Image (cartoon, rainbow, N blue to C red; front, top):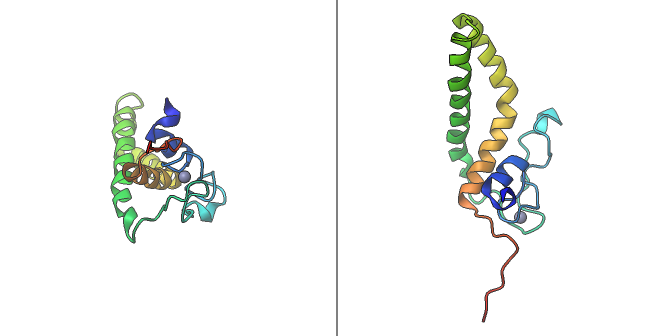
Length: 129
Ligand SMILES: [Zn+2]
């Protein structure tokens, strides 16, 4: 079920079209530290182009923004009510959390953006005729 959904490629760094090739060169978002943003130009398995046009990933910034907002919507209410933190401490926690999560959100946003435009084709079905 998950294997055939767009979520699979978003979560596991797989080509949205075939779910076999890798989108980013490295499987880990944290190692090597300076190469978390390095993408493959195309899928090694099916040849799907991962950079369809210049500026394609500008839209991924909005996805990334949405991820950060989700973190704020979870952390701020918990921090202010259950943990009874003051706003300065809460801001410090959020800043540290955002720095730690940046490589993960950057990659997830690009994979999600690509998955919107490239549907899963599964095992290539042969058309009759
Ligand atoms: Zn592929």
